[in-house]
Length: 411
Image 1: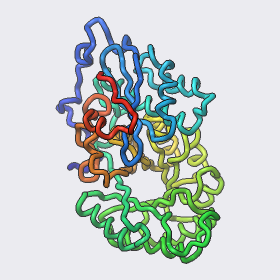
Image 2 (image 1 turned 60 degrees about the horizontal axis):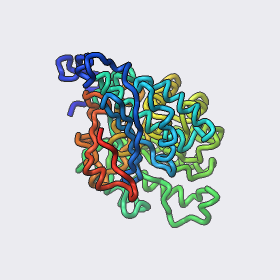
Image 3 (image 1 turned 180 degrees about the vertical axis):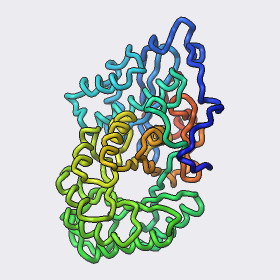
Image 4 (image 1 turned 180 degrees about the horizontal axis):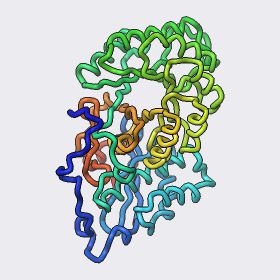
C-alpha cells in the first residue's frame, strides 16, 4: 500500500473526472441537486463495543445519506426532535442547516453534550448525501486532498492492563500481526499502590508503575511504531506534571487527557511544564470549546471526536484554528466504520492531520458493518466514490441492533 502522502490522485482514475449531469446523480432531466428536498431522518442503534447511533437522511430524489453520532443516552430522541427542522430543506446547505439546528436546539444545550452529538450525526449524513448528489467524494466538499491514505492508531487492551510485559506483548503482536505502526495504551490502570483514587493524587510508586508500562511498550516496539498513552482525565494538576516529567526520557507519541477537561488554566500549566507531548480535546465541544486550548497553547496535539464535537465541517474548522498555532490533529474515534471513514475524509482534507483512532480491533465483526474495506495494514485508503464511500451491510446492522431498535426504511 502506497505511503506517498505528497502524490496527487491519478487524473485518469475512475472517479476523478465526473459527469455532473442530473442523470449521473439519479435525478430526472428537469431536476438538479438544488431541487432536492429532505423528506425524513431516521436512526438505528447498533450494539458494538459502544452503542453506535447510525443516522440516515432521506430525500425526494431517492438518494440517501448515512452518518453516525457518538454514543450517548437520548441521542436518537434528539435526532427525532430535530427532524422537523430539516425536512423540506435542501441537503446541500450543510453549514446553514448545522447553524439552523444549533439555533433551534439552543434551549436544549446545543453548546455541548448529547445535543451537539445528535447534530453531528445529521451533519455527517448530509456530507454523504451531498457527495452523492454532486457525484464527488466527501473530502472534496472540504477542500480536496493532502494525502491519499489516512494513518490509523490502534487503541490496544490486554487481559491485565496493569502488567507492563503484557502490554508490551500486545503492542508487539498488533505491530507484527495486524500491521499497525501507531498504537495507544491506557495509563489510568491500578498499580496496587493506590491509597485513595478519588483525590486524583499519584504517589511515587504509582508514577513509577506507569513509567514501567511506558518503558516496556516503547522499548519493545522501538522505531516500528509510535505509541501514545491515555490517562482519561484522572489525575490532579501536580500529579500530571510529575508523571509527564517522568516520561520525558521515553519515546512517547503523546500523553492524553492527564487532567479533567473543565479547567483550561490547569491544562495549560500541565502542557507547558513538560516536553512530553500532551493531547486533549475529545471532551470539548465545537470550535468554540477548543478555542482556548489552542489560543493559550494548552495542548501540543488536539484530539476532537468528529461524531461528538459537531461533525465533519466543525472538525475541519477546529483543524484550521489548530493550524494557526501549528498544532497537529489526532482524531479521537470509538465509532463504527461510518464515522471512522468520515474522520478519514476530514483527515485527508487538512494539512495537520496525524492519525485517526481505531478502538474496535477486538470486535470481530466491526468491518462487516459496511460492504467496503475500511482499514488495511493500519491505514485507510480514502475512497473516490461519491459521499463517504461506504455502504451499510443491512444484514449485519440487523443482526447487531440494540434490543428494541428498528431497521432503517429502504432508500
